[in-house]
Amino acid sequence: MITSSNGQPMICFTVNEIRRMHAILSRPAHPAAHHLHWSRWRRRHQARARQCHYQRRRERQ
Image (cartoon, rainbow, N blue to C red; front, side, top):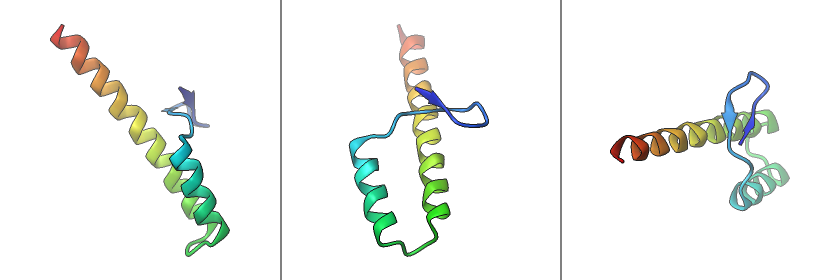
């Protein structure tokens, strides 16, 4: 995992995320900053979901 500029954990870019960002940034319907912000939010959310998933599995064992 990597961390964002404010220290929050994020997952690394996935192949699908890279493809999606390329498609969006090559034909943007919104400003690039909007898509980059959404990508950072999504990756932080996925990192939190992953941590919660692992924590629940540890608690069941």
